[in-house]
Image 1 (cartoon, rainbow, N blue to C red):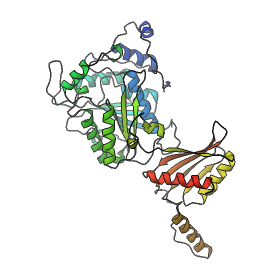
Image 2 (image 1 turned 135 degrees about the vertical axis):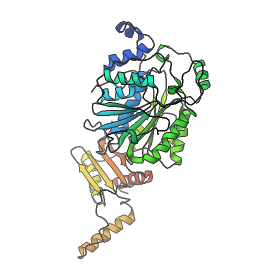
Image 3 (image 1 turned 30 degrees about the vertical axis):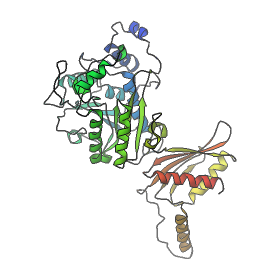
Image 4 (image 1 turned 120 degrees about the horizontal axis):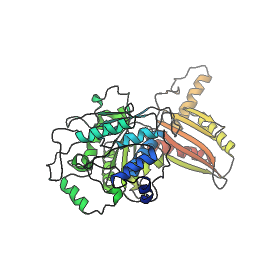
Length: 439
């Protein structure tokens, strides 16, 4: 496993230093040099295929790491080195850069890569289109070679697909685990060769972004929105067979359209982010899940200036407690939650607890119901059993941590771990705040 700082490309890349280290440095050599210097990866790239900018691709991998790390079923909110991860890279290009980076950074990660979605547009003089296949044979051969030369053939598998296959071809994957951890893709941005050429004519491309590409990589009918909408429709079929469905897009306006579509179909567990290192090219990421494990706020709400009503509900909030100590506040929280019909474990040594509630068990009605049941037991009855814990019924999972802030005060940090009802989490936070304030 390789450990790489997440801000490795935040500053300008020193082209002079790279040229001294790598005498053949030029255009595509930048990508090859960065992959070799920073990750120990050796690749070859054809002249007429996309040259992936390493900083941008690396950011996508880092975001996937964060999504998975903060939605693990152990509720730890950190990297689990023992977790087996299997991801699907839809449209693996000639470089196979996403699988190579993902497997190099984390030993337990494995990838399945599919061929690129073909373009059905008419060929242009400078463009080559593969009309009868979803596979770009040249890119596929380069990808196989790049995977093999880095000794990752056991971790990365490529499968051929055709236009009739879905984007998520689970039926074609042998030895498929119970579910995929994620899907990822970098769909063609453009809807036609004309749009591609017009966009290219408006840009002045410095060496780090001067790359060619085949239409199979850059053009698809309807552009990135049509491609992503197709992915959304397939996710409605597969649901929890994939934990996170994700895509990169080239336009911020596309993010808004995609989020609006997710909201229309009732998907409230989604995440948005932006990818930028070095201050040059900016791209955006959108992910959604049909499961109930909630990512951290920093992972799910990673776009500045995005319409607030389209951002996912914050999964974290903080309560300021003016009086008391870590111990006294922790004891008060523990006593309050032990009195409710929920699963609760408090660890006083780290002032942190995790709870799982089957419903709104803190409402007045739920408290009265529990008291009535306890009265029945006290007079010799057995009660009706409504308060028994049911591990498979979790409406709200949460974590509470008590910490001291910079000013010496006490903060109670509440983290929404699991559930689909934002109002339920909001209600729980309000109840705890009132109780701690003595109201």
